[in-house]
Length: 289
Image (tube, rainbow, N blue to C red; front, side, top):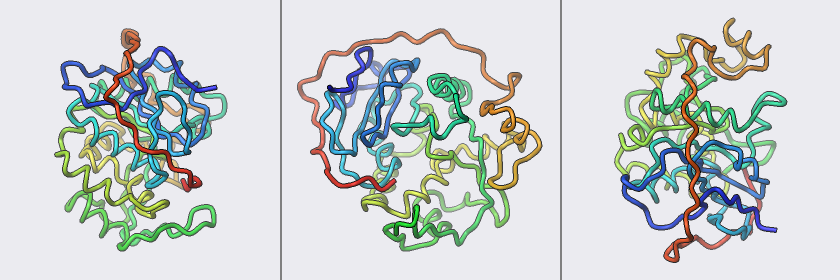
């Protein structure tokens, strides 16, 4: 039976101008996962992009290339002139990326609250910057190789000047789960996102892992995020005392004093099907992310 979440619109129809754009949108990069959990999320609109070859009603089929980054960039390019005020970008299943028993809908809501307050959700992790980083395999399977190492790729395709100095923390959105405001996304021209998307056209590209480490720099918010966090992000393999305390309690959110106040519940809308909406043809290959 099709997985159709009735309170939301799942269409990838013609872009709408800002005046008609939703306030909160959830963009889901799906591969055959059960996405009915989205129904509990406090958003105005959901767009599910399916790379699993499914034909669920209202889901948008995309070729199985480029990992979740390609999906997110497809959405940004396709709806550049009609982006929501804030958008959460998530994979089809995220409970396996959160502490056991975590409330997934609450986590999405907190990401959106942070984006409404700061323009972006706060990262919780960092890696020690490694200019020569490569990611040739994933769970033992070879990836489509990038032509450059991380820093060279980053400086050519993301930002020419902001790669962290050697040994410094590089904040990132682990597993590519984050929220961003329309204003921050529009800080780059549409052509920038088109070029970045074109770096992810292989079935399972190494550049997809490069991009996961780069989203904060794509949107030019890494410096602000670092200032807001004040050193509380978990550096992979070396948690700070504050981060360790949060991880020990199973709490992935900012301390209560730093968290944005709850906002009024968003309205839910049911949009009629747009007859001009066009979805890409399904892809029948296997998942590689």
